[in-house]
Image (cartoon, rainbow, N blue to C red; front, side, top):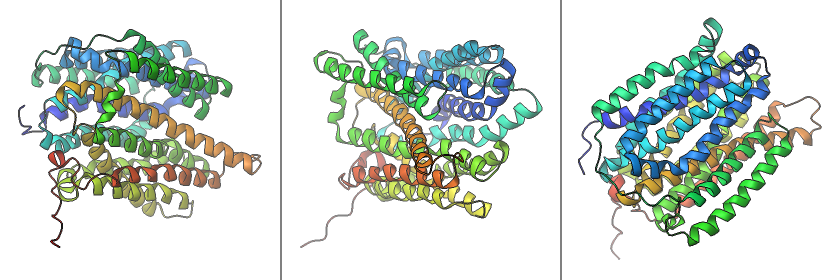
Length: 470
C-alpha cells in the first residue's frame, strides 16, 4: 500500500462531504422561503428533510457492496453526479411532492458519496497515516457548516432560494473532474454475493427508525406515524439480526463486532453522536426562540463551532501520537460533554463573545474526537473487510444522529408539558435538553477508558510508557 505523502486524495474525496454538509445547513435556513414559493407550510416541507435521511438510511448499507462490485472510484463519481441531478431537480421543483422526490434523489447520491469516499481513503492509506488522512478529509467538509447558515440566508434574501441548489452543480462538476484526474482505479475486488433479503430487512429497519425519529422530533406528520414506523424499524431490526446469523454473506455482518477497537468505535461514537447530533437542532432554536435572534444572526454566532473544528485538524496527528486513542477519546468525550452542558448556562445576558468562545472550544474538542473515532474504527480492520466496516459505521452514524435530534425534541416536549406548556418552549426547556443530551454523550467516555493504553498504537503512533520496575 503506498504511503500517503500529500493530502490530495482526502481533499479530492472531501468534495462530497463539503456538498453534503453545506447542503444540510443551507436548506434549514431556507425552508420558510421555499415553502412560501411552492405553496405549502414550513412544517410540511420538513418532509423533504426527512426524505433525504430516509434515502441515506436505505442505500448506505449497500454502498460497500456497490464499491466492490463496480469499483469504488466509479461509484463515487456516479454518486456525485446523482447528487447534482437531485440538486437541479430541487431547484426546478414547483410542488411539495416534486421537492420531496428531488431530495430523495439527492439522498441516494449522498448515501454513496461519504461512505465510499471514506472507503477509498482507507484503502489508499497506510494505517500509520490514517489519523492525518482522516483529519485532511474533514477539513473542506467543515467549511460547509461554516458557510451554510450565513450563505443560505444571503442567497435566499438577496437572490433566490433556488441558488442554494444551483451552487452544487459547479462543485459537482469540479469533483467529478478531480476524481477522474487524481484518484487511482484501485485493484479489482471480488464482491460478496448480494444479500437481497438482508437489503430489504436492513432498509426497513434503518429507514423506519430514522424516519420515525425524524417525525417525532420534527413533526410534519401526525406523531403516531413516527411511533408506528419506529416500531416497524425495530421489528425489522430483530428480523435482520436473525437473518444475519443464518446468512452466509449478510449485507452488514455482525461478526465485524469481533474486533474490539471496531466495536468500541461504533458504540462509543454512537453514544457521543447522540449528544452532538442534538446541537444543530437545539442551539439555533434556543438562540431564536429563547434569545430573540433572527436566523441570519443566530447563524453568525453558531458558525464559530465549525471554525474551531477546522483549526483542530492541524494538530490531530500530533495529539493522538502524544496521548493515544484511549486517553484522548476518553477524556475528550468528558470535556466535550461538559461543553455541551455549558450551553445550559447561556442566557440573553451572557456576552456573545463568551458564547462564541465556548462554542469554538467545543468545536475543537469534538473535531479531534471524531477524527480519532473514524480512524479507530479501521485500526484492526483488513482491506478485505473495509467495505463492511465503512457501511456499518455509516449506518451507525445516521441512526445515532437521528436519535440525538429525537431525544432533544422529546426532552423539550416533556419539559414543556411539565410546566403546563401554555407559553410554548422557554429557555428553561432548552437548558434541560442540553443537560440531557450531555448526559448521554458522557457515557461514551466509559467505552474508551476501558481500552488498553496501547490500543490502536499502529494507527496513532502512540507508545505507552513502560511500567516502572518493581
